[in-house]
Image (tube, rainbow, N blue to C red):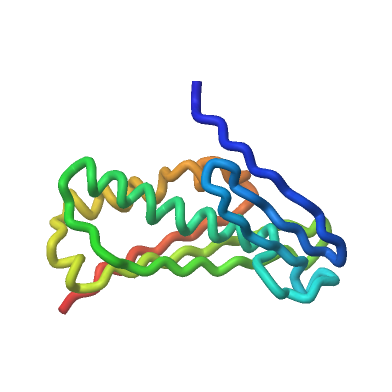
Length: 144
């Protein structure tokens, strides 16, 4: 059986919620976005979806790197979320750019890069997204 994680959520009113990750006690807040009656004072629920995708890709790449002995140091992930413009309101696109700097890119050969790209493209969050969400992904392996 897979690990079960409990998360407790409290609706605070005024379109704000707080969530507590029970295993760690870490708390985060959400707010409705400005374009949907909120103040945009924190991540919206769909922002967290975009965040989950980017961090899942990075984490899964890190797991593969650790398992295979690849040196994978600091790199950047940028996710751009676009919502539909017609009802029903939903995430339409999560565009992802992964930028691996020269200091890390030069340490990884073609096989390692392919393994890491595959890890990102098959991370659990990406595999869990509905097929109607477009997820274009671009890897930039920077050269010196």
